[in-house]
Picture 1: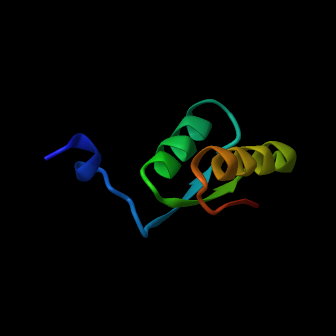
Picture 2 (picture 1 turned 60 degrees about the vertical axis):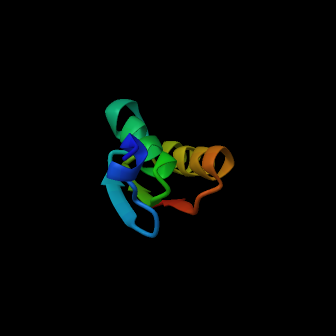
Length: 66
């Protein structure tokens, strides 16, 4: 079994707070890389929307920032 199969998040969604910087951003990108739909929340709306845009462009996955 491939490692990717162990962490398959296809069809799942994952909320993540403080997603716009550092570890939170890395987690959001990791979720998206495993095919999860991500919804991020942050105090810094511009950064949050930027991360969501990065997910959409890099992975072609639905993502939103709130």
